[in-house]
Length: 119
Picture 1: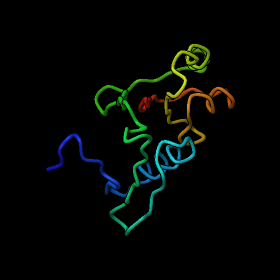
Picture 2: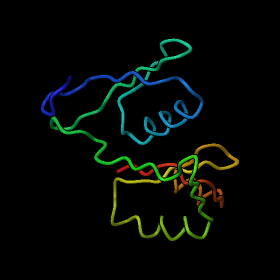
Picture 3: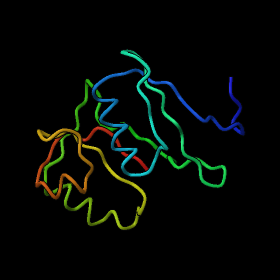
């Protein structure tokens, strides 16, 4: 058991296509230091901290197997314009172009299934 004042340097997660694509987005946006694929079943994620505080403040899972949440391009456009209030947050959508952040989905003019929200 890890107490709340201890900092984890790495976390092991299950290896899946969705997990790899999500980690790639987190790495490109600067939310994690790096990740390495250990074997067919596990991936090690190296957590990023600034001044001993987590970079990832909030992770909200929006779409669940029983309750899918779909967003249209116009809704994403409004979200991206209003996202100036949340400077370090983004939405991850599953589109026909793969997993995209809200900014990338607006650039490609694509809607899709809203999977999760990072801040």
